[in-house]
Image (cartoon, rainbow, N blue to C red; front, side, top):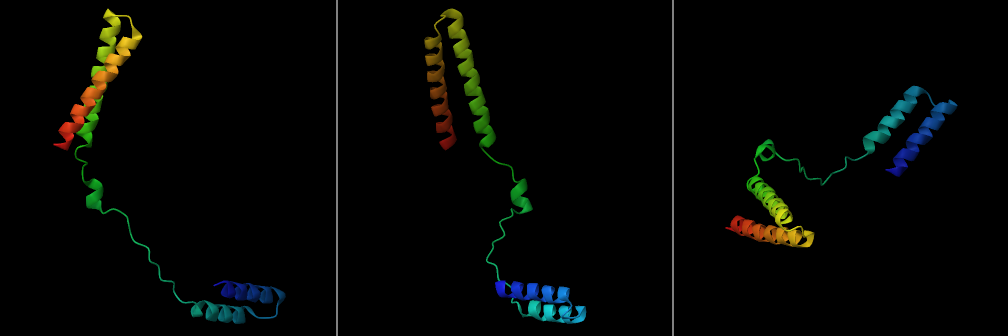
Length: 112
């Protein structure tokens, strides 16, 4: 391919210097380009089909809703603990423990 490009550049230079006519340039360039073989590509089309794009995801919305509920329950527990016992460490520990328990329960339900 590089040799062909060099030949075309050589033809351009000869045309610029006036050594060949534009008709001779076009004929020689046409012969060079005609001799190039078409490249075969091994590319695979990975664009999703319209059916695949419009298919709704199942399960992800339930998991997202479960996580939102877990975060709300954790926030409620932390708030209530801080209201009755102004100990931040105890409130955070309780909140994280409840979040972990709810997350495990949510993931077990999802596996079933």
